[in-house]
Image (cartoon, rainbow over all chains, first blue to last red; front, side, top):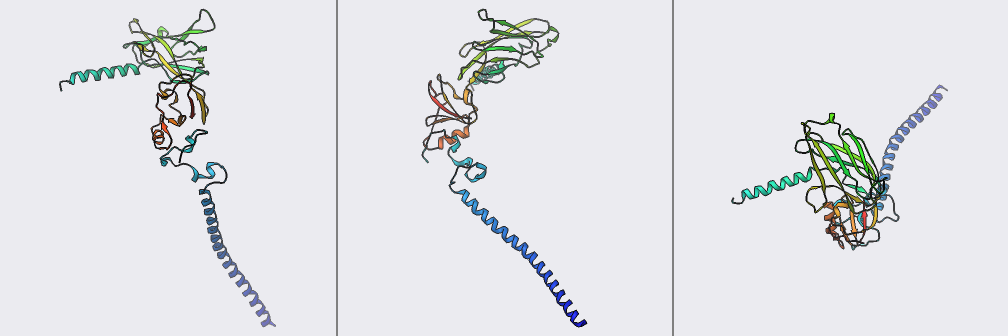
Length: 90
Length: 232
């Protein structure tokens, strides 16, 4: 009877240890998973950035599309300096 | 070597002339927006040959209304009025009290009045100023700053009237030839007439020169009735 109880207790203990180990493993796995998920997120953001670098579909604020801002040493007048209605050859 | 004394004299004359040109009674703000009410400040750079400035009288240019002078620590004011229209101020005088007269020419003075400026953009107005100085022995001397451009004598104080503007693009039709765009558009980012562009900024001028399809608009190239796009 005592032996049976000991067996049950041992099984419960193993379950607990196993659960703890599993928890710990799950924790570090979570961390790893979190990191991996974060990388995936960055990749997504990179994709968005790439899309932003192309020709925009809509006119949006410069702060949402920093790559579209003119760079000073472009060698030609920035578009902000071209008056309304004037079209110049590229 | 033979020309050295002559060169020296020319150089000395040039320096003296430029010093005289700098040291006149001038308007502190060289430009003002046409048709607005503004405070006009006159800066008195110096007295007369070592004597302190004792009184200043400014002739109010035609077309300027609603003149109200401001007292200053220089002295109190008095006005004269137009014979035909007594509401029009024709001169303002600032007179220093005898007790405040300085023994030498040491101070800079700023004298101000509020006025409604003529609604005549792209023109200049000239304030003729009469200066009275008082030496330590109470001897008075006089200098008239009344010469208009092209005239001999001490130059009147000039102020250039610019058109009203807003940040961004502004469209103007010029009423008369403009001899020098920098007078009216020094603070503009860029000025366009058709496909010709002007800027006072050398870096922008370089970009104008290297942009396809654009030519440089010379500073004296704008004529009456030209249409301009100006970005501020």
